[in-house]
Image (cartoon, rainbow, N blue to C red; front, side, top):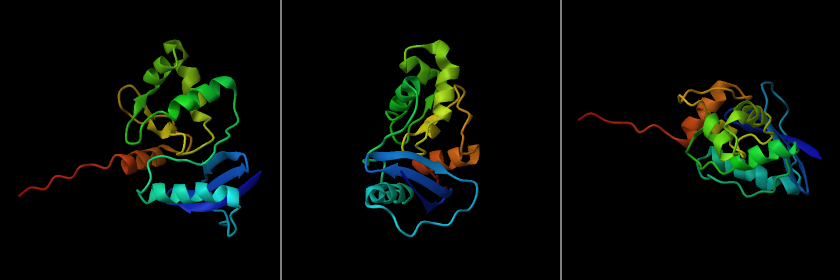
Length: 157
């Protein structure tokens, strides 16, 4: 495994992976020295993240290899199905997974998602539409959702 650090509009991102795929992407609350050399097998990830932040990409194509329990993997696979620019509630996510009573377990697995942005846990909101529960901080969740769903501005004439 190799770890690199890149600059994003939301802070320094830590990317970990190897030839088998990217296993983790995390945003840090501390400054780290940015990586000057990027291994070949992480270059596509870095490029696609930059394109995402430049509003030129809505889906990712690089290989993933997140580590987690079978249940977490199931939740993360369902998260990956949430379309760009759309949101879903924790309740609806639990329903899609077949057990409305598992809402807390679903929320917990969502919070343990190791692939920031790529597996879009930021697209999961409360049933009432409020922003809740984001490991990277609610301000980042708000930023990501606004980045993906820009407000329509109206001009008065």
